[in-house]
Amino acid sequence: MRTSACTALFLIGTLLQAQTCFYVHTIGQVPVAPDDQTPVSLVISGDLSSSGAYIVSAWASVAGGQVTVEISCTDPGGLAVLVPHDVTIPLGLLDPGIYSIVFNSPGTADLAPPSQHQFEVLGGTGLCDSLAILHVGWHPFNDQGLLVTLLNSGSGSFPDPWMVLHTGNGDTLGVETVSWPGLNGTTDHILNIPIGITPPSGLFNATLELWTDSAAQPTCSWELDLSLCPEDSCTMLYPRIGNFGGALVDATYHWVLIDQQTDTAGTGSMDLSGMIQEGLDSICVAPGTYSLHMWSDPPFTGGQLQYGVGTGENSAGPGLDATFAQGTDPNVMNVPFYQPCSGSTNDVNGNAPRSSLRWGRLGAGFWIEDQSGSPLGAVVVCDASGRSIVDRLGRDSLIRIDLEGVPAGMLIISLPERPGVVVRIPWTGS
Image 1 (cartoon, rainbow, N blue to C red):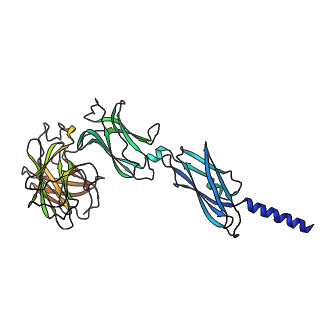
Image 2: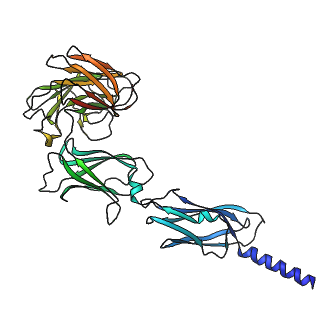
Image 3: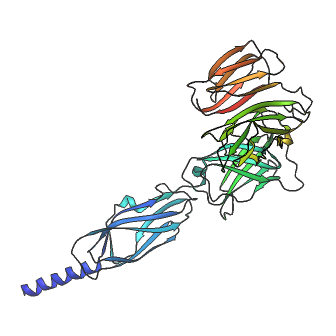
């Protein structure tokens, strides 16, 4: 009798061992804090019942707020040791809400803590908080397009994004064609203006929408008070040249920027030599039509040179570039710079007097000059929060400002004695 009982217990134990081949200890999600724009996966960690046990299949179904996990495993025999094993099950995009996890897996023992059987998917509002709008306005070099610059500081991928800009009364000002697989860091978006639409010239109410993938409604939306033209009296423009192959270049490249009245808006030079094969200069100019003239001294042959202008202190962002033809004649490039803003109060081609100010970077600082020869007066430099960093009195027409030790960030230069003269510059540090 005792033998029969022991035999029965042994058979039951053997049967249970054969039935349970995967012991679940933890359940997690990737990403840890999922949102409705990022595909979600379950990561299930546990132990296989022996060295011979394995997972046959693993999948999950989602119905309402419940995720049902089905894992099929088998144990044909092996060493009687527990073998750690992870199972990843993709769930795809999920709607915002709270989800519970249940197992419908006869061969799996669910030993995970109750708290791990539930997770939350965040909605679009929280997701959109990770996006910062850096710029909305006219494209600097394209009078048929608008430019939107976004910064994504979060983990949301925003697959296949495209932007739409509307006026407050619902008119569509610009629509982007998908050009990015997702949003990662800083991205520029060019919106094409529909035929027959003339964007407002002053301040107006606008709605900026971000659409993603095949969504039936905007993923993010912002209400803005917007002006498409630069708000400052001048905007930074960066003449540039670079050698991208062939041979090392050793020469000085001079440039002159001419405005529509054939006046000189600015001049400068850039040296290429040794391992320094890229040159960058800067000038602050008002909206208008310009021409960039560039030549080398002495005339140099060799290398593969590209020259042009950009709107940032590196090659990122919008720009105009062309092949630099080597020889004695200057290379000439037409530069339409915020052309739709011509005629505004800050425009060199409008009715307001043309600004005689120009400035550029110099070592660990910058210089500013009034080409008319008039004394500059007070020059104030503030950081983005409005805190004064430098306060100098320019008794002459040229002043040099030292920014040694000033951390990187947006700086604001103003001349209090000249109302309306304000310049914002991206300072990259000394």
